Length: 142
Image (cartoon, rainbow, N blue to C red; front, side, top):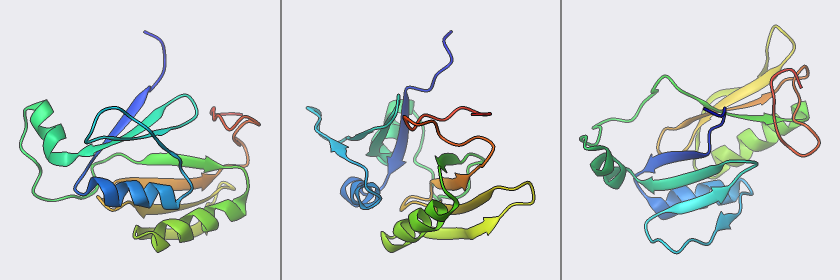
């Protein structure tokens, strides 16, 4: 098996509101033939937004009655420390919830946590020891 994550699908309550949230962060929405899905091409991956009820139906499970921390975060690593605050502020202004404001970390990094409109948790981080490459891709250890 090749090591990769190709598509990250987030179940959302309001497809257009969630699409607007990610567009407010500067992400470009892709045109798709299918209705009921929103797609953002990333560097080597795709972020898909799909109605939560439809995703639950596809999985054969009930829609969860509450949204909360699922034990998983999505990470967005940046090149410069100041970008953490810029993205955090843009996410909050777009309707996201600030969970932990930008702060220095004891090992030399800087990060913040936000939740999108559906409670999906994102860490925005600057790791001076593992910065994104020139082409924007990220690999632990640089």
